[in-house]
Length: 146
Image (cartoon, rainbow, N blue to C red; front, side, top):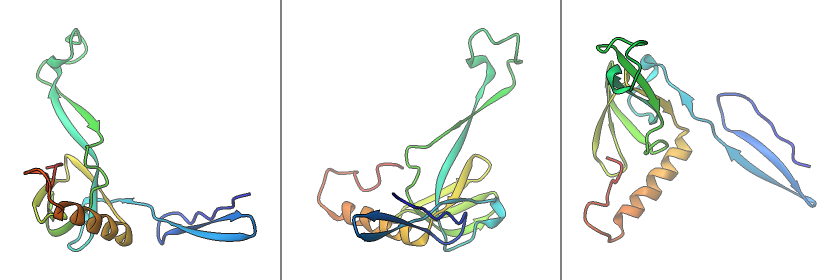
Protein backbone atom coordinates (compact mmCIF):
# COMPACT_ATOMS: atom_id res chain seq x y z
CA UNK A 1 0.00 0.00 0.00
CA UNK A 2 1.60 3.32 -1.04
CA UNK A 3 1.74 6.14 1.48
CA UNK A 4 2.46 9.76 0.66
CA UNK A 5 3.61 12.94 2.35
CA UNK A 6 2.45 16.29 0.97
CA UNK A 7 3.87 19.44 2.56
CA UNK A 8 2.45 22.08 0.25
CA UNK A 9 4.68 24.57 -1.50
CA UNK A 10 8.29 24.60 -0.44
CA UNK A 11 10.91 21.86 -0.43
CA UNK A 12 10.23 18.87 -2.66
CA UNK A 13 7.87 16.31 -1.23
CA UNK A 14 9.14 12.78 -0.73
CA UNK A 15 6.79 9.89 -1.38
CA UNK A 16 7.43 6.42 -0.04
CA UNK A 17 6.17 3.44 -1.98
CA UNK A 18 6.39 0.04 -0.37
CA UNK A 19 7.29 -2.57 -2.95
CA UNK A 20 7.70 -5.94 -1.32
CA UNK A 21 10.10 -5.46 1.56
CA UNK A 22 12.03 -2.43 0.20
CA UNK A 23 11.25 1.29 0.27
CA UNK A 24 11.99 3.61 -2.63
CA UNK A 25 12.15 7.38 -2.21
CA UNK A 26 10.78 9.39 -5.10
CA UNK A 27 11.37 13.14 -4.97
CA UNK A 28 8.59 15.28 -6.45
CA UNK A 29 8.89 19.02 -6.90
CA UNK A 30 6.05 21.46 -7.48
CA UNK A 31 6.20 24.61 -9.60
CA UNK A 32 4.93 27.78 -7.90
CA UNK A 33 3.03 30.62 -9.62
CA UNK A 34 4.87 33.93 -9.34
CA UNK A 35 3.47 37.37 -8.74
CA UNK A 36 5.22 39.92 -10.97
CA UNK A 37 7.07 41.42 -8.00
CA UNK A 38 8.44 37.98 -7.02
CA UNK A 39 10.36 37.45 -10.28
CA UNK A 40 14.09 37.91 -9.71
CA UNK A 41 17.28 37.48 -11.71
CA UNK A 42 18.84 34.04 -11.45
CA UNK A 43 15.67 32.01 -10.97
CA UNK A 44 14.39 29.39 -13.40
CA UNK A 45 10.88 30.03 -14.73
CA UNK A 46 8.54 28.72 -17.37
CA UNK A 47 5.35 30.05 -18.95
CA UNK A 48 2.34 28.41 -17.32
CA UNK A 49 -0.44 30.29 -19.11
CA UNK A 50 -0.61 32.86 -21.86
CA UNK A 51 -3.36 35.31 -22.73
CA UNK A 52 -4.40 36.31 -26.24
CA UNK A 53 -6.83 39.12 -26.97
CA UNK A 54 -9.02 39.09 -30.06
CA UNK A 55 -11.75 41.50 -31.19
CA UNK A 56 -15.26 40.38 -30.24
CA UNK A 57 -16.42 40.56 -33.86
CA UNK A 58 -14.49 37.32 -34.46
CA UNK A 59 -17.24 35.50 -32.54
CA UNK A 60 -20.06 34.82 -35.00
CA UNK A 61 -23.56 35.94 -34.00
CA UNK A 62 -22.42 37.40 -30.68
CA UNK A 63 -22.96 41.01 -31.75
CA UNK A 64 -25.94 41.26 -29.41
CA UNK A 65 -23.83 40.21 -26.41
CA UNK A 66 -20.55 42.08 -26.96
CA UNK A 67 -19.87 45.40 -28.68
CA UNK A 68 -17.64 44.96 -31.78
CA UNK A 69 -14.82 47.12 -30.34
CA UNK A 70 -14.51 45.08 -27.11
CA UNK A 71 -11.63 42.62 -26.79
CA UNK A 72 -12.14 39.03 -25.70
CA UNK A 73 -9.37 37.46 -23.58
CA UNK A 74 -8.46 33.85 -24.24
CA UNK A 75 -6.26 31.93 -21.83
CA UNK A 76 -4.27 29.00 -23.19
CA UNK A 77 -1.37 26.71 -22.35
CA UNK A 78 1.62 27.46 -24.61
CA UNK A 79 3.35 24.66 -26.49
CA UNK A 80 6.63 25.29 -24.66
CA UNK A 81 5.13 25.13 -21.14
CA UNK A 82 7.64 23.44 -18.86
CA UNK A 83 10.68 24.59 -20.84
CA UNK A 84 13.03 26.32 -18.38
CA UNK A 85 14.22 29.89 -18.88
CA UNK A 86 16.78 31.60 -16.65
CA UNK A 87 15.81 35.15 -15.66
CA UNK A 88 18.54 37.68 -16.47
CA UNK A 89 16.81 41.02 -15.80
CA UNK A 90 13.45 42.36 -14.65
CA UNK A 91 11.81 45.68 -15.48
CA UNK A 92 8.14 45.18 -14.67
CA UNK A 93 6.08 44.17 -16.54
CA UNK A 94 8.90 42.80 -18.73
CA UNK A 95 11.29 39.97 -17.97
CA UNK A 96 14.43 39.17 -19.95
CA UNK A 97 15.32 35.49 -19.82
CA UNK A 98 17.61 33.09 -21.68
CA UNK A 99 16.74 29.64 -22.94
CA UNK A 100 19.04 26.63 -22.76
CA UNK A 101 20.26 27.45 -26.27
CA UNK A 102 21.31 30.98 -25.23
CA UNK A 103 18.48 32.77 -27.03
CA UNK A 104 17.03 35.82 -25.33
CA UNK A 105 13.27 35.94 -24.67
CA UNK A 106 11.25 38.85 -23.36
CA UNK A 107 8.12 37.97 -21.39
CA UNK A 108 5.29 40.44 -20.81
CA UNK A 109 3.80 39.55 -17.43
CA UNK A 110 0.50 41.15 -18.42
CA UNK A 111 0.11 38.44 -21.06
CA UNK A 112 2.00 35.51 -19.56
CA UNK A 113 1.81 33.82 -16.16
CA UNK A 114 5.23 32.59 -15.06
CA UNK A 115 5.87 29.84 -12.55
CA UNK A 116 9.07 29.22 -10.60
CA UNK A 117 10.65 25.87 -11.33
CA UNK A 118 12.53 23.78 -8.80
CA UNK A 119 16.25 24.35 -9.43
CA UNK A 120 17.09 20.63 -9.61
CA UNK A 121 14.33 19.97 -12.16
CA UNK A 122 15.21 23.04 -14.24
CA UNK A 123 18.92 22.18 -14.38
CA UNK A 124 18.21 18.59 -15.40
CA UNK A 125 15.88 19.69 -18.21
CA UNK A 126 18.31 22.48 -19.20
CA UNK A 127 21.18 19.98 -19.50
CA UNK A 128 19.06 17.40 -21.34
CA UNK A 129 17.85 19.97 -23.90
CA UNK A 130 21.37 21.35 -24.34
CA UNK A 131 22.73 17.84 -25.02
CA UNK A 132 19.92 17.25 -27.51
CA UNK A 133 20.83 20.38 -29.46
CA UNK A 134 24.53 19.46 -29.62
CA UNK A 135 23.71 16.34 -31.63
CA UNK A 136 23.86 16.87 -35.39
CA UNK A 137 20.43 17.41 -36.85
CA UNK A 138 18.47 19.42 -39.40
CA UNK A 139 19.17 23.14 -39.61
CA UNK A 140 17.06 25.29 -37.33
CA UNK A 141 16.34 22.53 -34.81
CA UNK A 142 18.23 24.15 -31.93
CA UNK A 143 15.22 25.79 -30.25
CA UNK A 144 11.98 24.75 -31.98
CA UNK A 145 9.66 26.55 -29.54
CA UNK A 146 10.75 30.08 -30.42
